[in-house]
Image 1 (cartoon, helix red, strand yellow):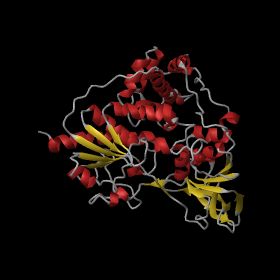
Image 2: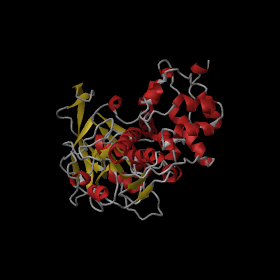
Image 3: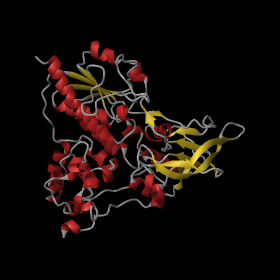
Image 4: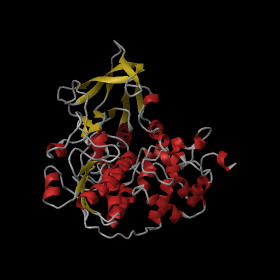
Length: 465
């Protein structure tokens, strides 16, 4: 009977209320709800959920601990493999990873693994539950570039193994995309991001902000002058892409990166902060991924009517199902099967609209999705004051451009072994969005952990006594 029980619903802010604030939408489970949901797990002998998790959290074990009211044990089990459980419990695409592999999802609803992970992490924070990890310094130093998910995961494992680790962060706050990219209403910064980053610091990891590797210091200097035995590049992908259509240089056209950084890292949503941001009456967001949804939902909270323009249908939207659902609840107008052809402007150089053309779907392309095809003569205009481009990102070329011998892809990604993080430069490893382009938090963490293992092998073989 327990296996067939319906999934325990999660309490949320009502749409009419949450579009007026930046408070977290989802309230999460309380202890009773979490234990009830944990009862649904059938404790598979060969758990497919674990294999579907990029960091291989021992999911059945921590859920069993929740079921038995052993929340501290659950936190310890998760901590063996993840340094960011409250983050991952909120923003991971569980539906395509752990929950997507759950056997209960074949004929019903999968176990709410993500919500249970979030519960454990939030319980640990509110109860001030933290189990110190005793480490002995092994005499080796590793530099980590970037304090996003890949860098934090790599640094965590290395610190546990006794390495002296220092993270170099270009911005004034650590966290990478967790801090500047994901909105407050999905991922609270003080309660979640900064708390979990601080837990990494408690391991002995040092984080230095306002350091731009390639300008402030180079990788060569880290290795040759500063005495680091290896370097991990987890600098992410923060260089926005544009469509190169007429009118993209009008005032009011911004990248989703800039828009979200202003609202998240620089708190443009808070009237007490002097960070200018303009949305006007209507905003058109171009794109269909999670970043596009974040930008659209942020603009809605800043008071604009928001259109989301995407060239495929809702079925092909790359954003999480939950994010699309929340966006629709909040009144985001989906203009699907449409593609921009021109940004329209007034005589003063400000955006006044977005010209689009309707699309049909043809045969699948190399991504497996049906290729969008323009419908001739179907152009139409959307009246708007701001256009936010959310078309993906690529790595900043600064690091590669100042590191001789570091090979990159044509599109800018650093070439690195998928399983080890090794690059073409000895002693330099890379992972996460800097290698793959924009992806998910948990995939970046998985890459960071794989690189940490290989860094350990490399350092001990090359410098071991």
